[in-house]
Each structure stands twice: as structure tokens, then as C-alpha cells.
Image: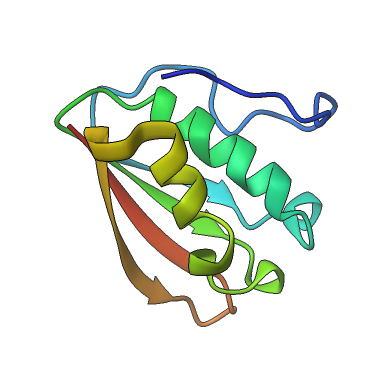
Length: 103
């Protein structure tokens, strides 16, 4: 599993530590609106920082649309069968929650 950098170096990372528990990555901040590439980059980083046997809830900005349109294919390309994901819900504010289980 590798990390990527698509030129979003001036944006705060979604996490700075490895999580040996289930947790949520907040990608609903203003800098994520209209930036699906940034969301994908930080989603991959969040999965990288989640230990096997746990999950991370990827909370994405509603302005980017349903994560099926930009996130699922990227997760599949990066991890294949090493993770499983499921769409959880759309938040009242318009954002979306996708739960990624790390095997």
C-alpha cells in the first residue's frame, strides 16, 4: 500500500498517527468542497493509517457528490481485496459516509 501526493501539500493531513482502532476521517471541511482529488488522496492516507482489523469512516463533502462517482474506483485500484467498503449514509448536511474495513 502506497501513499500519493497530488500537489495538495499545503492542506492539513487528515491524520498524523496510525489508528489501532476504528475512527472517522473528516473530509467535509471547506478545502474539500469541489476537490475530489484531494478527498481521494486523504482517503488513501486515512486507510494507510488504519491497522488491519479496524475500519475508518470516510466522511466526504457533499459538494463532491456521491463517493461512488470518484472514491470507490480509487480505493479498488489502490487496495484491491485488501479492504472492503460500504456506503453508510448521507449526512443531514449533505456529506457522505463510507466505511472502509482494512483486512
